[in-house]
Amino acid sequence: MGIRDELHAAFDGQAFSSEALLARVAVQLDSSRRVRNYPWATAVALVLTIALIATLLVVRAELGSRNSLNQGGPINKCLPAQTASPSGEGHSTITEYAVPADLGALGDITRGPDGNLWLTGYAANPPRSVIVKLTTSGVFTEFRVPSANTYLGGITTGPDGNIWFTETTQPFPGRPVSGKVAKLTTSGTFTEYIVPSTVTDLRGITTGPDDNLWVADSGANEVLKVSTSGSITKFAMPLLNSRPETITAGPDGALWFTESGTAKVARITTSGRITEFPLPATGNQWAYWPTGLAAGPDGNLWITEQGNWPGGGPGVVAKLTTAGVFTTYRVPSTKVAPGLSLLRDSGPREITAGRDGRLWFSAVWNLDSVTTAGVFSQYLVPTRDGTFTDLRSITAEPDGAVWFTGDDITKSPGRPVVGKFIVEPASSC
Image (cartoon, rainbow, N blue to C red; front, side, top):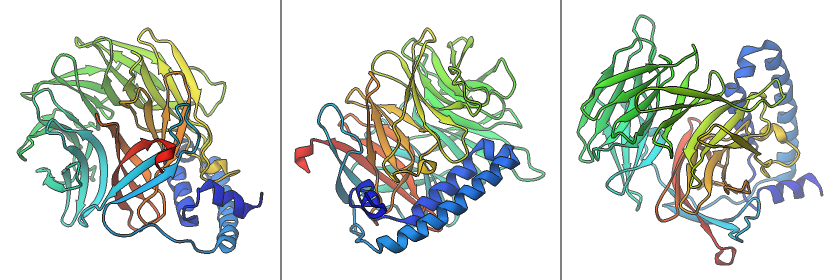
């Protein structure tokens, strides 16, 4: 099979964009900790990137142009799966909604107590972090965060029926970093609670079984318990630079969270006792660190793991019992560019439990799923203009849809993307 036929099959008839592939490489090189830490790795990555650019220019000249998707309104697109699922559900329907022009970025997404989707975002004009309400019919409402110069972390529905989120001030010379845990009523009223720390970097937030909010503070190396009235209790990590990031309520009445600095998953009781579980040794010096975390339908924790190889490498999804036993599953290589494994993300990112009994996770342009037995299915997520979405956040809905946010990274500046994804029987497409 020639390169023209390979790429046509890889994209299942969708528009091929060399800019999209190059942008993906740029994102991976920028996000790789090994590249940043080792100058020789930077040089190797640069050589690989130059070679890839030359290859893509040749491919682009051979392929020529293709028709793009419909530019107007919400779009629905029926696409074949990247790998066949055992149930025979081989296609997906993707609906993308037009994002308001003033929104420069969208981040985490969660289902609110009012049945709407709630997202973190950033408005470019004037510049300000925002919380966005999105109805299931695609109507956006923006609520501007009171504090200026902040970036937002996680978002969740609290036990009090409000939207809770984390925010950290942008680090500028001469100004200490500060953080806040904030709530927003569904009618649009903010309340912010200052976290007493000058090294804070607030990330994930979730509702605990004790009706408190639990927050991962990566900068201060702590886990926070926050009451709905704003009282904050801190629990320090056993080791320095553990960097807790993603946190979720476990099936055992405790909170579970990831440690990106020490490559561990940890458990904390509601009284503050911490137990850590190192990721299994891979025998590979590049190793892995945990990214996403979710409680599965089988009573286990499910983790996405990202590798340190500068250009990509295989991602891993792992199952972790509440007793601390890991089972790992290697994510199949994507079909996005056959033979160019450099373009495969070094690991999946967010993960969530679907209403279909599967775990869904984001991986570059793919929205993938895995059964509790370790069987994968992969789906591309195209944008309205025929390129692909670099997924940021996902959440599963009761109707079986998986909502997502992302970026069309081929645009300058990047264009935020939001939509929903539903698996369909192959016969329906």
